[in-house]
Amino acid sequence: MILKKTAAAVMAAAMIMTNAVCIDSSTLAASAAQNRSGICAVDYVDIREDADPYAWRTGWLDGGDHVEILDEKYDSYGKLWYYMVYSGIYGYVPADSISENGTGNVKADDNVSYDMSNYESYLNGQGFPESYKVYLRELHKQHPSWIFTAQHLGIDWNRAVDEECVIGRNLVHDYAPDSWKSMERGAYDFGSGTWYQLDTGWVAASEEIIQYYMDPRNFLSEEYVFMFENLSYDPDVHTLDGVEAILRGSFMDGWYTCPDTGDVLSYAQTFMEAAAVSGVSPYHLASRCRNEQGAYGAPQSLGTAAGYEGYYNFFDIQAFATANLTAGQMAALYASNYDPDYLMPWTNQYKSIIGGSMFLGNGYINREQDTLYLQKFDMTDGGNGYFAHQYMTCVFGQANEATSMLYAYSDEVLASAMEFKIPVYDNMPEYVCLEPGSSRDNNDYLDSLSISGVKLSPSFNRYTQNYTASVSSDTDGVNISASSNSSNATVYGTGYTALSGGSNTVNITCISAGGTQRVYTINIEKAAESYSEPVEFDYSTTDVNGDGDTNITDAMILFGYVANKRPLSSSEYSRADIDRSGEVNITDAMAIIRIICGR
Image 1 (cartoon, one colour):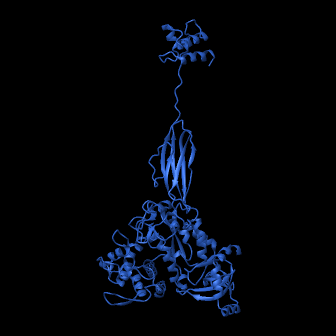
Image 2 (cartoon, rainbow, N blue to C red):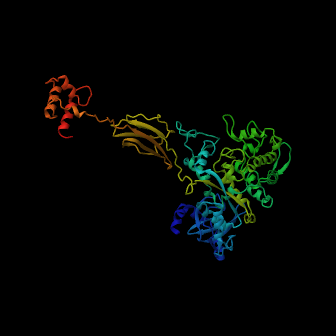
Image 3 (cartoon, rainbow, N blue to C red):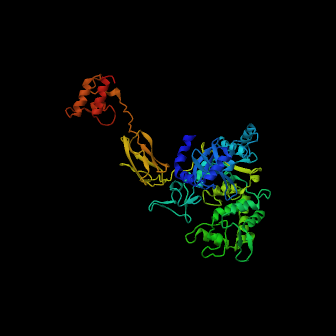
């Protein structure tokens, strides 16, 4: 265990030294006097620089690790953290991840007796794949009241991935690691070496990062599982305090004044009213607006979109960039429409939040897209088809919102029977799809591909991966050349390739700096060797001189004729044309020799 933590300790060395000199000696003395210690009561937890789930990670704890508790601190969500030290690593961990003095009194499930055999039967009955169960067992231990329902989508995993990789459906920040950005046609400009801006500051996401966020198994943890929560409004669960916790620290923390009516209202209370009207969880509504608009707000939520001042669109409905308008301007333009069913036009914050929540309920929750996951990845029909009806293009938006949901719930709510609908695809990969671990690019394209002296069909295009070629029967092999677009990529499969008769498949693989690979395939057809039917000789007429016997004399007569040393009579000529070709030549003479030799 100590060896495993060494890397984290080295990584955080400077920070640890800084923390060490900043710790008040009286605090250490008091802590020592209290003799507070504990054991990590969860399988894994990150150690943070501050009491904040987004603070710098300085290390981690595994289940059973012993720690010394030095202090306590509440974060902005009201959650308690312990300041502790483990193997020389100082930092904060959530208090509910530590069993103080090893008694286990902080874990909700420590004194619960589980009949895991019954739970295994439940998981089997739901049809969860084995690769899901390891995560669900741990969540069940932590929250035995939670209900996990398998949502069998009936969609092939590969088809779903292909659909989500359509350019424009999933975006990442333009400053994201290059391995997160797509290199597909329409996503990347090979001429300038830059990614196309599909929205201001956003570019197309790579297949690898899309698969990571699509794979439900990556998010079956307490921190992210709320992307699968049923999002219907429950007044017994959703409280004003919970909404205020979500909005705390943002521009929606507190009150606002409607510019057109002068009404002064509470953001949190507005979200509660929106939930009652739309039937959508107020926690979901509040966290979604915070995620869409950011902590400080955006022009479309502040009513300052250029050319559309005074219009508000908190949920970024129809917010996409065009050739002439930014996404924020498009959102404000939409807000200027007239539709009394949704309180439009949205000329103040109240109407935008209430009307937008009704739109969200009617457009998504009531169309079977009743989880954050399904609103991001449209894997249900709901009367409007699959894949295209997706609330946001940000590939990780649902994960961000899920984290906000966790901190919005009180301990009492978290102990209740909450339902989570976990998607299950057909033909899922055996192992979870990993997050791209490299910051290097995914440029696995070729700039050229050719066979020396042989034409490829079709002509080379970096986006075309399958080609054909034809060679003659006497071609023993070919020389294949290829070059990558990126100088950091590696190409395999070039050089001399021996060919056999018939079809030959040659794969040229380009591996990017980020580790992705693209395979270009050439099917080379080698012509069959020419073959003539064997000549049928008329051996009954091989007695050229008519002496009643076929012997060397007949052969010499033919050799003499071929050498222009002896003429043939008409009867001799007729008998000498053994292969009946209409001509007497050396072939006929050799046929007689074979006859004489018994072949």
